[in-house]
Length: 266
Length: 363
Image (cartoon, rainbow over all chains, first blue to last red; front, top):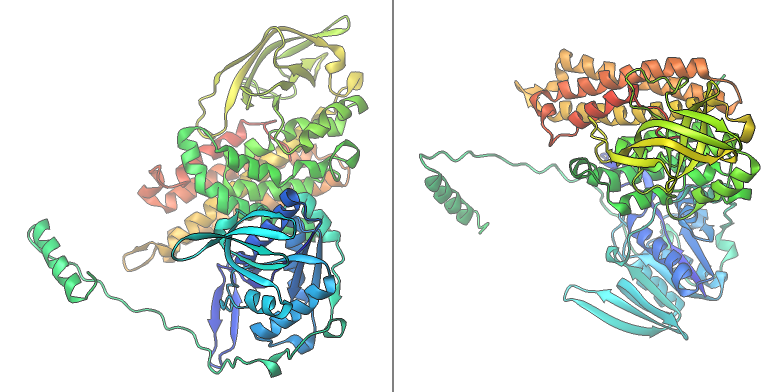
């Protein structure tokens, strides 16, 4: 059984994001690590590795669409324990919306061949759309299993998973192949081991272009259905502090409750 | 000219350790200090990063060669998280690296694979002695040859994880030089004493060890009859301890710096006051200077050079630097620095130990 884990490079969670007057977004990180593997994807990577360790997966292939810097995310995936990594990179892909990205990923997964499970984090922390996994499933013609919090069983061409929904949890089964998006409750991602790091630093990561793939549909900024018409920074929230003065604590509490009612907080 | 650029492997490794230190160690270290125990899962996650197997050749179950530079950059990242966790994780190296550097082929085959296992091996180095005039080159613990056996007598202190160790590597004065010997924990005459009550490092389980006419086969001497190049082992240990001091002091500096920028007094952050800003600047200078000395000594070691002079100068500087920096961190926090809810008092207590602790850990 071959497993693909889709991952991407995103700004770090501690990065300070700046938007200039023209709407150009940039970021830096006080810790000196501005880009990281999308934190949600780490759960997908960990689950892929566990499918190899516990459910007989033969290959766990990390897959990313992006520029050369995306190789960092792929190297982290290899260092954690993925067996292979592939970068899909082409100028024509720049500016793709989630549907375009899903088309590219679906074509790459088809090219890898014999894949039974494609894992995604539930969303990326930059765009925060959470759409790519389902759109990739649609393009592949596979069953999408979203918000998965546990993989219970895999075998005989089927899979049983637990989904974490707002109303509760549900256990469902599906025929392979499937696309799975995972939530953080599914596991605790491991840290890259030094042995993995050594393998990753020596790995040659193949880079596929658009010409290497049979992409079904438009990609890139020209085909994007999403128009980023205006990008701006959120003005800092303003607040004020009022110290409640009274002779007794009870009186202070009464005034506080009245004010909270006035503000419709309670 | 020395190049201070870390290679890709070292950068990825330090990033992984720094994340471990932030996400796992910093969440538990204060409770661990108060309770005297580090959660097993935190130690296991740190062990799984696999620093030690990277120093062990493939023939013995590892995947590389020892690099002192990699060891010190990794140690700094671990110690930024917590010193007790770092010493717990790197204590097995105080056995593994001496075996790697000086062991006979049979000893390497017998012991090195233990350090490449998924679980931390139950083996500890017994180096320090409970003596106010302790000199690593003139140990009071003695080893005397008796036919084809060695008889050991003496006391050891601050032996990490001695309560669970199955084997000890005991350092002793043997025919005028410091040598070391594998001693099974069940040996007659060997006793693990009470847990040490230290000024800091309370989360590290460390014990007294007494040896009374303990007899072991002469073949248990590390390095066989040739013995060990003791200065090399001591220098390895001093590099690790100094790198740990740099990591801990970097943490103390960063904490004090951030506090000073946020703490508003008299209408402005206290970092704007020269008395505070100068202290922070001196702390940063101290930490950077110490790191440079550690890296230079480690780089020289990796070139196969003797570093006794550099390691001695480094140790002298770093031991005092650690107290200076952590004391200033406490001073920046004012009265809060003296309260146990804040970490700086722990770092100051830990810092005082560097002058006394040798042989505790090697990376």
